[in-house]
Length: 537
Image 1 (cartoon, one colour):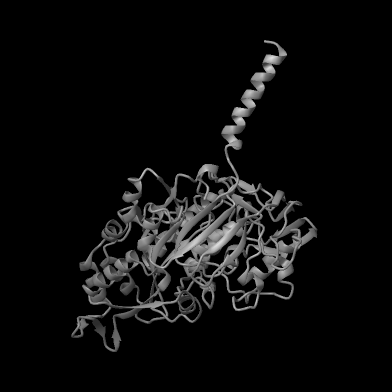
Image 2 (cartoon, rainbow, N blue to C red):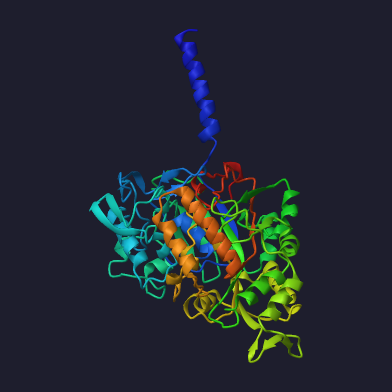
């Protein structure tokens, strides 16, 4: 074979390879995705709802992130160093990163070490209303070594620490006079988020209208193929799937279980299962003297038929759980069995707690104390499935003499009632975990107080000591042993009634190509998604 023939073969292979792996991906098009509800606040430090967090993934960047195989990937940092004593982590930032344009300004500002240090200091300020502080209190200080180098000093050595530096970074130049955030400040970031991510915020029409994003043409990890993304909120979950099927949206982030079979039967659409390392629970305010009685909380757990609820309301697409860790994780204790459905046991426990008398409507009482509780639920979760879960909860408990009154609240009011003023008895909620599975913020007594995650004021000195021990050890096997013990105690103490973890499904139109959904961070790979030119809207 002569040189000319070799050259022709090389060019043919190059062209075909390019077509398959890149040239076939035309830039352009619009992706419209649907959410049940609207974002609460698009500020990374303050956001704690999944709708806001998904949008934040599109707009903001972090130092590092987890790849699909669990490997640490650099986002805003190109490389890093961990000291031999495991107490210093140095990040060398990328020099080709720019902030999205500020409205009214023509030039984009460069990303620097000042942004990382400012974000960390605001996040860790005691007056900032965030749930993130307990996750990052292993860091003693953050300081700028030079324009593109940040050094973190840790309070103690920590193995596998890099993955913890996944918090989103805010622009310091828009926070010059700010030391902490409560959510009521007059900041441009609350109205027009400015990030370094693959998509730039364009507009949000009102409090319950579309959020429009545009591809960041200077994105440091590669310009996204899809030109525009629109998040379309729905007030009624029942119509999201139908809107997808009739072409009104291209992607549904979380398909109701009852709609899965309908989507499976339509060849235009693809179902994508994903995990969120999360679980659902009923949580108790132990400040209430009746709910402070463990037998009462245990009785509630025995009174409800969780397998029946999971099967009836979620098509059985999930797993009933027994404790405070995400199932499938290395932290979960498989030796602890979920509480069985036993109204007889519930009645025995309530009798033992002294609630033997009944009112005319069947509610148990003991002297001046009554087994009547107020359950607060955010309106943003007011959908058919949630209503069915709560109605079943009411009926199960009514059968053993416990009365549940439901109070629906706006998200902000619900958050304040639960996390700030603690004006509630029971909540129905979910926790979403990161890869560390650190539950200190949920159950340690030092995490009781306004704005903190131990909303129910649960206290147990043994749990405190074990949680402190997990933070002090570098031995993974020792930590696993401690977590197993914590699982046992927290299952027995019942600060929550642990319900289930669900298998989530996204659904999308097949005109979207190369769709990969990160197990815990939905839009991690969105820059590689594309729409063929002939199918672009």
